[in-house]
Length: 361
Image (cartoon, rainbow, N blue to C red):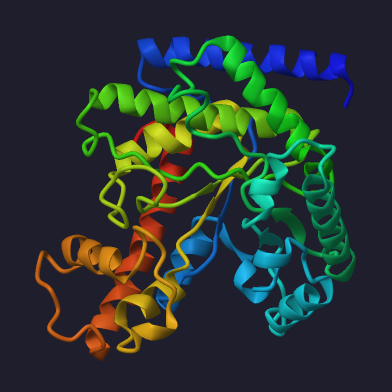
C-alpha cells in the first residue's frame, strides 16, 4: 500500500468516525437494515444440545476456533508450527469442519507486529502468520479462515487518550501504524475478525459519567470495525463479541453484559462501522470445566477471568446469589450447561430482533 493510498484511507476513516460521533451525541443509535443481507451470526460452543435447535432457527451456525494452546512452543519461538496446526485441525474435523474458522495466535505475535517493519521480529511474525494461513486454506479449502483480532486498534492511544478525546493527528498515527502492521496478513484472510469485547462496564467506572464511558467504548468499536472494513476489500467483516464482561479494562468480569448495553454499545457501533455479522465467543465447554472441576491445578488462571471470577459471576447470574456447597456436583454442571447456553441463545435473539426492528427485546 503506497503513501497516497494510506492518506486516502485515513481521510475516509476519520470522516466515518466523525459523522457517527455526531449521530451518537444526538440520538439513540439507529441503523437501517433495509435491502441488506441478514447478518452472519456464528457461535463457538453450545454445551446444551437442546439449544442447537433454536440456534439454527435463528440462522446461527458454529465456527471452529484453533487456540494457541495447541502450539505452546509458539509463545516462546514466535513461530507457528504449521504441521502441528494442520494436524490439530484435522483432529477437530473428524465430524466435518464448519464453514468458518479462526486461528488464535496472540502472544508474542501481536506485540511483534507493533515493531517497526524493518525489524527481524516484525518480518518473521508476518512471514510465519502468512505461511500458516496459506497452508490452512490449502488443506481445508471449504472453510473460510481468519485470524482472531486482526486488524486491531488499542482502546487507549497516546497518553491516556481515547477515540473520543484524542486529537485527529493521534488517531491518524494509530490508524497508519495499524495499516502498516496488519495489511500483509489481512490480505490473506477470507474474512476479518476484529475483537470488540466489552471491557469497561459503565456502572463500574467511578471517575466519569456512565454516558462518557459508553461513548468511549462505542467510538473504539466503530474505529476497530471501520478500519477492518477499509482493509477488507469487500470481504466479510465479522467482529468477535462476548455476552460476558472480559478482561482488559474495568468491570465485574465474567458477569453477563446488560442486553441494552450489549446492543447499543457493542452491536450498533459495529454495524455502523460496516460489520456484516458477529462471531459470539464464550468457550463455554472449557469455562464450565474450569468452574466445576475439583482438580484446579491443571488450569492456567487467566487474570480477572479465572475460576474465582467465574464462580463469583455465575453465583450472581445463575444461582440467585447462593454459592454451591460442591462445585463439582453433577446438578451444578447441568445447570451451567443449560444457563450459559441460554445466555448465548438470548444474545443471538437480541441481535436478530435489533436487525429486524431496530429495537431491543
